[in-house]
Amino acid sequence: MTDGWDESAGAWIADMDGDQGDWGRRHVLDAPMLARVQAAAPMSVLDVGCGEGRFCRRIAVPGRTVIGIDPTEALIAEARRRDPAGDYRPGRGEDLPFGDGAFDMVVSYLTLIDMPDYRAAIAQMTRVLAPGGRLLIGNLTNFNSAAVGYDRPMTGPAPGRLAIDRYMDERVDWVEWRGIRIQNWHRPLSAYMTCLLDQGLVLTHFAEPEPVGGDPVRRSEYRRAPWFMMMEWALPGR
Image (tube, rainbow, N blue to C red; front, side, top):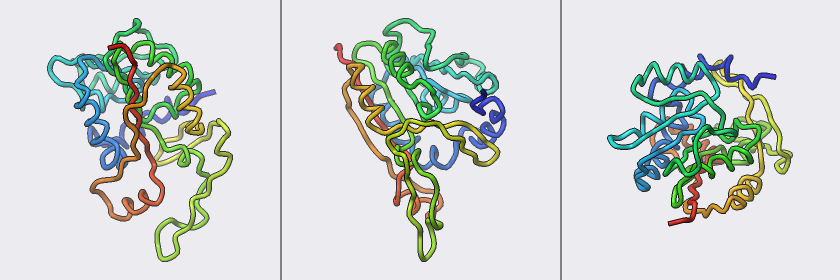
């Protein structure tokens, strides 16, 4: 059974608006994700689920090795087309084709929600981290992925309430927007936290970043229930 990514690749590329990204990336996640990369100053970075390679290009600086990996061939092809000198490879987060300790930083930018076996993926991302390395995760908030809709529009004189159900159940749902139709996985926050702690990682940063700029109506909606969270985890060792 397809997860929708092959069929949605063209619509996804269009939705990213070149290197600008969609609204959430452009106005919420990009700046704080970039700030964590800049603070860590890694010499080698693996972007797991790199898609069309937008974030790889954002973090590429002279002297830094950046590799992007993604299971969708059309997205890897687009990444290579836009960045012929970049290193983009087909592959899955659950089975990374790299040696132990190969990277100073591993990035999962809104990709854990796409992975059926997140436990295997987190184990693999930890395995390829060098001692002292960082695992940087941007993900949907868990109450966002558990949402089943709104009982009334969020905006206007009588905004409705976000309806959340089956929060503790790990499950997959189809989501659709602007020609994209893909599967997203919901898990409770405790599932991710337990898995990361079991890998021996140490939490060094957690945030629900606020939007900056963009449509004020969308900013207001976001403040009612943030869409994204960020976590940075360190692998002890130096």
